[in-house]
Length: 201
Image (cartoon, rainbow, N blue to C red; front, side, top):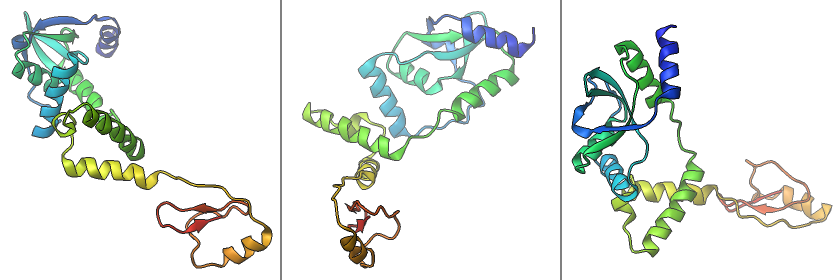
């Protein structure tokens, strides 16, 4: 069995366990940086919701572990005074495979869809404010970032009304300078463009 196959088997079969938080150390090659604001937000999330998902570690000596994925979660738990951390211990793993796995996990988490993120944040912020909580103390965004992200969802949201018109009206409106030329024409439908305030057919 190759080392990759062995690691694949471990990842699939290793149960989540808990180890002493102080028995874990970060690796020396993690390229994933985090701002103070993001780190404080992560700490708040752990305080608010409890553990989120386990830290992935490898064994470096008896009852000593090195992080493959989850350094910031571990550091937050350490600062919160949590004595044991949930982990998936992959056992003895070579430096090369540990770095490969960390790189893949760090760089393949995807990116947020701006419109969906903005809509989600709008709901979250509203709910937090209604319950008397400060979104800026919990969410991983500063005031300007939150404002910008929520504005994106408003800009992209299409609130339109369909209106039946006769062909003559279409012909008259088609030549109007008020029409939004960046949109596709639809001969029987008139919509007002939320972004530029003109009409599209």
